[in-house]
Image (cartoon, helix red, strand yellow):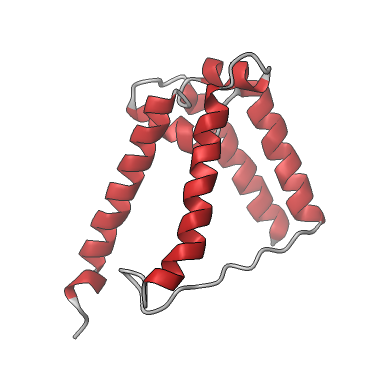
Length: 141
Protein backbone atom coordinates (compact mmCIF):
# COMPACT_ATOMS: atom_id res chain seq x y z
CA UNK A 1 0.00 0.00 0.00
CA UNK A 2 1.37 3.41 -0.95
CA UNK A 3 1.91 6.18 1.55
CA UNK A 4 -0.90 8.76 1.83
CA UNK A 5 1.25 11.48 0.26
CA UNK A 6 1.56 9.36 -2.91
CA UNK A 7 -2.20 9.12 -3.42
CA UNK A 8 -3.65 10.56 -6.62
CA UNK A 9 -5.83 12.90 -4.57
CA UNK A 10 -2.82 14.32 -2.69
CA UNK A 11 -0.97 14.85 -5.98
CA UNK A 12 -4.01 16.50 -7.56
CA UNK A 13 -4.47 18.81 -4.58
CA UNK A 14 -0.77 19.72 -4.59
CA UNK A 15 -0.94 20.45 -8.31
CA UNK A 16 -4.06 22.56 -7.84
CA UNK A 17 -2.46 24.50 -4.98
CA UNK A 18 0.74 25.10 -6.96
CA UNK A 19 -1.24 26.24 -10.01
CA UNK A 20 -3.38 28.58 -7.91
CA UNK A 21 -0.28 30.05 -6.27
CA UNK A 22 1.38 30.47 -9.67
CA UNK A 23 -1.71 32.14 -11.15
CA UNK A 24 -2.05 34.41 -8.11
CA UNK A 25 1.60 35.42 -8.45
CA UNK A 26 1.17 36.19 -12.14
CA UNK A 27 -1.90 38.25 -11.33
CA UNK A 28 -0.20 40.25 -8.56
CA UNK A 29 2.81 40.85 -10.83
CA UNK A 30 0.57 42.21 -13.59
CA UNK A 31 1.57 39.58 -16.15
CA UNK A 32 -2.08 38.80 -16.88
CA UNK A 33 -2.43 42.22 -18.51
CA UNK A 34 -0.94 42.20 -22.04
CA UNK A 35 -0.39 45.97 -21.95
CA UNK A 36 1.94 45.56 -18.95
CA UNK A 37 3.88 42.81 -20.74
CA UNK A 38 4.13 44.88 -23.92
CA UNK A 39 5.41 47.92 -21.98
CA UNK A 40 8.10 45.64 -20.54
CA UNK A 41 8.98 44.31 -24.01
CA UNK A 42 9.18 47.90 -25.31
CA UNK A 43 11.68 48.71 -22.52
CA UNK A 44 9.27 51.17 -20.91
CA UNK A 45 8.60 49.30 -17.65
CA UNK A 46 11.15 47.04 -16.00
CA UNK A 47 8.97 45.77 -13.16
CA UNK A 48 8.50 42.41 -14.85
CA UNK A 49 12.28 42.01 -15.04
CA UNK A 50 12.26 41.73 -11.24
CA UNK A 51 9.41 39.23 -11.38
CA UNK A 52 11.10 37.04 -13.99
CA UNK A 53 14.50 37.38 -12.31
CA UNK A 54 12.99 36.35 -8.99
CA UNK A 55 11.31 33.36 -10.63
CA UNK A 56 14.58 32.25 -12.23
CA UNK A 57 16.39 32.49 -8.88
CA UNK A 58 13.70 30.42 -7.12
CA UNK A 59 13.72 27.74 -9.83
CA UNK A 60 17.50 27.47 -10.01
CA UNK A 61 17.81 27.25 -6.23
CA UNK A 62 15.03 24.68 -6.03
CA UNK A 63 16.47 22.47 -8.77
CA UNK A 64 19.96 22.67 -7.31
CA UNK A 65 19.21 22.54 -3.58
CA UNK A 66 16.15 20.28 -3.26
CA UNK A 67 17.99 17.08 -4.29
CA UNK A 68 20.76 17.91 -1.80
CA UNK A 69 18.44 18.74 1.10
CA UNK A 70 15.83 16.01 0.60
CA UNK A 71 16.30 12.28 0.14
CA UNK A 72 13.33 12.17 -2.24
CA UNK A 73 10.64 14.55 -3.49
CA UNK A 74 7.34 14.74 -1.63
CA UNK A 75 5.29 12.95 -4.29
CA UNK A 76 7.75 10.63 -6.02
CA UNK A 77 10.38 8.07 -5.15
CA UNK A 78 13.35 9.91 -6.71
CA UNK A 79 14.38 13.16 -8.37
CA UNK A 80 14.25 13.07 -12.17
CA UNK A 81 16.70 14.60 -14.60
CA UNK A 82 15.05 16.39 -17.50
CA UNK A 83 17.62 16.55 -20.29
CA UNK A 84 16.97 19.16 -22.93
CA UNK A 85 17.97 18.92 -26.54
CA UNK A 86 18.74 22.01 -28.58
CA UNK A 87 17.97 21.48 -32.24
CA UNK A 88 16.37 23.23 -35.20
CA UNK A 89 12.83 22.47 -34.03
CA UNK A 90 13.57 23.91 -30.59
CA UNK A 91 15.03 27.07 -32.15
CA UNK A 92 12.07 27.52 -34.50
CA UNK A 93 9.58 26.90 -31.69
CA UNK A 94 11.35 29.36 -29.39
CA UNK A 95 11.42 31.99 -32.14
CA UNK A 96 7.70 31.53 -32.90
CA UNK A 97 6.86 31.70 -29.21
CA UNK A 98 8.94 34.86 -28.79
CA UNK A 99 7.41 36.56 -31.83
CA UNK A 100 3.90 35.69 -30.66
CA UNK A 101 4.65 36.93 -27.16
CA UNK A 102 6.15 40.13 -28.54
CA UNK A 103 3.23 40.84 -30.86
CA UNK A 104 0.39 40.33 -28.41
CA UNK A 105 2.01 40.35 -24.94
CA UNK A 106 0.39 37.05 -24.01
CA UNK A 107 2.09 33.96 -22.60
CA UNK A 108 0.09 30.75 -21.96
CA UNK A 109 0.35 30.75 -18.16
CA UNK A 110 -0.65 34.38 -17.65
CA UNK A 111 -3.40 34.02 -20.28
CA UNK A 112 -5.03 31.20 -18.32
CA UNK A 113 -4.64 33.19 -15.09
CA UNK A 114 -6.13 36.21 -16.87
CA UNK A 115 -9.17 34.18 -17.84
CA UNK A 116 -9.61 33.38 -14.17
CA UNK A 117 -9.50 37.12 -13.45
CA UNK A 118 -12.25 37.76 -16.02
CA UNK A 119 -10.17 38.99 -18.98
CA UNK A 120 -12.01 36.90 -21.56
CA UNK A 121 -10.38 38.65 -24.54
CA UNK A 122 -7.35 36.46 -23.73
CA UNK A 123 -9.39 33.53 -25.00
CA UNK A 124 -8.43 34.54 -28.56
CA UNK A 125 -4.74 34.24 -27.72
CA UNK A 126 -5.32 30.87 -26.05
CA UNK A 127 -7.16 29.63 -29.14
CA UNK A 128 -4.16 30.68 -31.24
CA UNK A 129 -1.78 28.96 -28.82
CA UNK A 130 -3.90 25.82 -28.97
CA UNK A 131 -4.00 25.85 -32.77
CA UNK A 132 -0.23 26.30 -32.88
CA UNK A 133 0.25 23.36 -30.53
CA UNK A 134 -2.13 21.26 -32.63
CA UNK A 135 -0.27 22.17 -35.83
CA UNK A 136 3.05 21.24 -34.23
CA UNK A 137 1.63 17.95 -32.99
CA UNK A 138 0.27 17.08 -36.43
CA UNK A 139 3.57 18.08 -38.07
CA UNK A 140 5.57 15.91 -35.64
CA UNK A 141 3.67 12.75 -36.56
